[in-house]
Amino acid sequence: MNIINTRQDIEKLPEPEKSAWLARLAASIHRYDAEGEIVTDESTITRFGYSLEDFPDAPIADYVAPAPPPPPAAIELAKLDIRRKLRLIGKEDALDAMLDTIPHARKDWDDSKFILTTDPMFVQHRPTVQAMLGLTDEQWNGLLGIPTPAPAESENTP
Image (tube, rainbow, N blue to C red; front, side, top):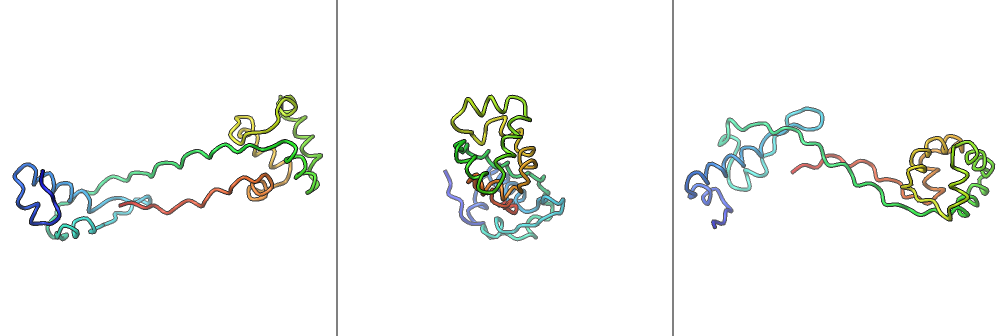
């Protein structure tokens, strides 16, 4: 097994190993970004002592979208806490109206001790409930103690 740290190490490799290394380096130079623009990144090739002139026919790698973030962890919301928090902001009557409006909501509410934020009914009806309560996403999350999602990170590609 050869340890490859420099251009000289690559140049000493036998074929086809040398060609494979050079092809990998060439493939690291150009890529498309999320907006469809070509980005040139010389960091990998310069690390090994090469320059753009050494790879005049370097291909342009396809854009690869970042993996979606993992789904949020379930948060357990105590029904009594929800009711009391809504009472404090004068929205308790809206909770009861909502429970009577959405099919099966009243039965599920009465049969449970807590609500999971990942529960399919909670997820499906959250926009409707928020609208009925007149709450923004930030107000909703703050009221229920749900962490606000971090803003989308800018694309970090090697």
